Length: 419
Image 1 (tube, rainbow, N blue to C red):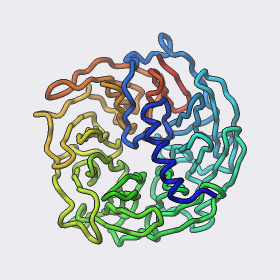
Image 2 (cartoon, helix red, strand yellow):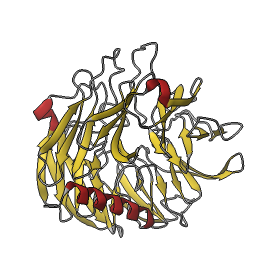
Image 3 (tube, rainbow, N blue to C red):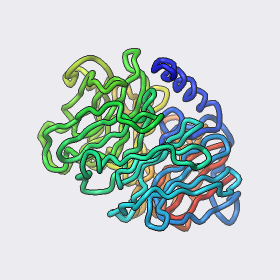
């Protein structure tokens, strides 16, 4: 059996390779920051004009597709069950698998298949609102299946589970952050056995202990750590589950209902952390030991609707780009929280909001609004320039996937591939 160190090195090499090849192995892409490598990506997204193909999915889902090589993996409802489908980049279905009864979504934009699959090029790992976690090979054979809610109790989230699994050494890690006993759990990639489970429970006001965010595994102070945001705390755990540091101070007045949906983003040893239901954003230096609250916060911004409640920011090359729910786009220096532009860039206004996270592909930024409108813009000196606006016929919640100079787009019930 390969050693832990060898596997950690293997995944580091694999993820570095993702950035140079056309893989999108999870929700936020190869480097966990919603950034694709340079290419010639389309600005027109019109099913009648430049869709290479479009596929009617068998049921509803809100997850983002993941891609490895010529294979696309996507979760959705299949006949009332948690489902996983595999397509080729040519639009051919290779297989579909049902993994047990689904728990349907409550919110109009949600489903029982909110979490995005992850893949290492040999296996694909899935997680559902039902609590089911499973591993399958590229032939669609189920290698193992577990249910976290049967093992540790039902989730107590008020809304729909949304966190995606992440790779952490020889395990995959899932964050369960809700009212009551919250935890991080690591399942062995090989057989689904529990490698470790670490409690992450904070005594917070009503609903402020609930989170729909996804951890990021990144190197902090020279060591791979699991950086997690939720319950008014940003934390760093080692790959064996031990808490290394914690940063609080995000809810000093102990306000209720401050659940968090937007995940943090990381670049240059710092994180951008949206909180306070879309009115606040903090900038935090990662690392240290113990409670680092007093020293970790290096900047902040606030104002009505100035932060992000749902979309997760982009972070790359020391900059952070935050999309608000109502379409303001703001650039920051992630190391100190200073704005890089004089004014936020305002996308065309509408009653609809942004639930999908923005992505950067080459020099283009893509913004998908819930009513199906997709804007494309380019950064200029001191701001942004709107390049195109596209109207899709269906609601758009999943994050766009830029791949192979194409755009892979998952709407509420369809999958599109644009050139």
